[in-house]
Image (cartoon, rainbow, N blue to C red; front, side, top):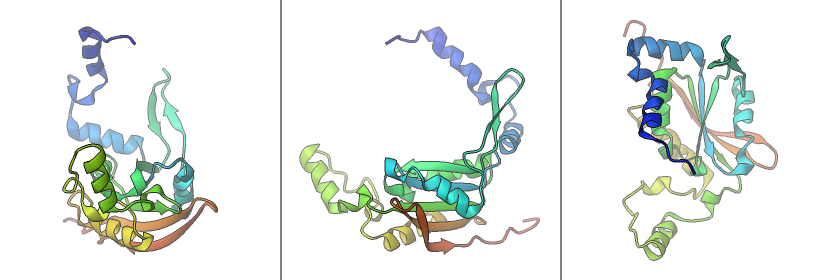
Length: 207
């Protein structure tokens, strides 16, 4: 393993937008929104068997996925045609996606948030009390107050998706006008089933 020198680490600043001499945050934000036409964020599980989720959501919402990477004349990757972004977390639980949703709205603007839980998920194989007790016994750590209990595992899909939809809607980092959906994805048939939805408030012109 090669250790980076201090000079090499400092050179990384050349790739940080906010460290450039003529940096102007509103302009950079506008350019990002143009470069990536994001419309839908999909939150789903990191289980490899759930890899088909984003394509299924793209079909459901008529989104472009995976799209193409656009380059300039020098071959630099400057944009993408995809309109769907993935947030991949354990069990597809929304609690781990809240910051990503906020950042997506700030940089790109979004219309839909789709939360997907899948059949035969590992998050259905344990209970909140079970993981808390196991960590206490095996790691010597009390995680009972570390996470919201209702977001730790999946006891049943309707309850977990209704909870996650409410959690996303209640977040101050969620734009009021986005539509939020909760789906179950069947990993064997590649089918989505809508469980819950929460339509956003209409945009107030001039507000």
